[in-house]
Length: 348
Image 1 (spheres, rainbow, N blue to C red):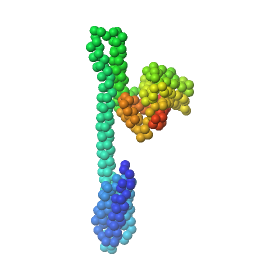
Image 2 (tube, helix red, strand yellow; image 1 turned 45 degrees about the vertical axis):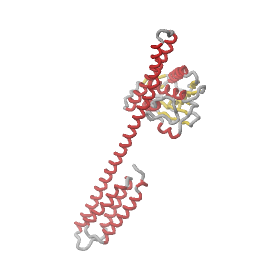
Image 3 (cartoon, rainbow, N blue to C red; image 1 turned 45 degrees about the horizontal axis):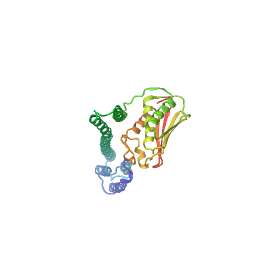
Image 4 (cartoon, rainbow, N blue to C red; image 1 turned 30 degrees about the horizontal axis):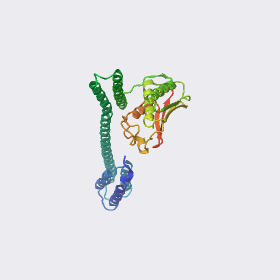
């Protein structure tokens, strides 16, 4: 719906037209059929008033004026039955015209919204293609480079050299596989095809294991779990929750300087487990926060730091599937806090 202010000048102009028609009705024109058609004119002018409340007001004013005209005595030679019938038909005509205007304006707004949605979808697709191209380029370059060096030095390379280059290749392949899995998760989430496999989970143990794995992969950072306040068990999907916590902690590491600490705090609040992941990294610009959990969106200050733009979107989907929610507070240059609320009994 458009803002009412956009149609106010037209609305006041239409009201003046309605008043003029009413004066013609009362003092000049004796033909009630003509008056009925004249009252449809301001209703048709409602096309220029995009606000539905104002459109309904225009129709209401016309009908009110027609009814008021019923109480003004017609000329003596007028057949009262014809007079009343014509007034009734005038009301019906205005109502039908008003409905047509409403449907026409609604259709126009729907088409405009569909066009905006199509443009957004096209922009999202372009962003996705750009992201995929960028993210795959580096690991493929590493694989190609290491394979080339293996071929060139096949007669002189040591076993240690082979192991080092093979490890680099495997790491690049693992990065590509992780990206493909993230995109597949995102696609399933957008199509509502992610299925929960609920079980009773030791949430503290699950998060502690994710923290341990992240600490091994990010030796230059400190991962500090504070999980004593978590409830003992929770109903949830182990794989999806693992992905969500892994993504939040990995993001805290990725966007924080070396030597900094990523703190994972677990508490219990009413019937929810509350897990907060806090970092001291680059933070998120305020204008980016509303779009942060949308697919393929990345904050404007990430620079050259790699990322797919689907991780936080999947985290939000995982939270919603469990009947919970995820939120973020952040200040550029002072880090971020992502908070995940999960119901203890699983989705209701």
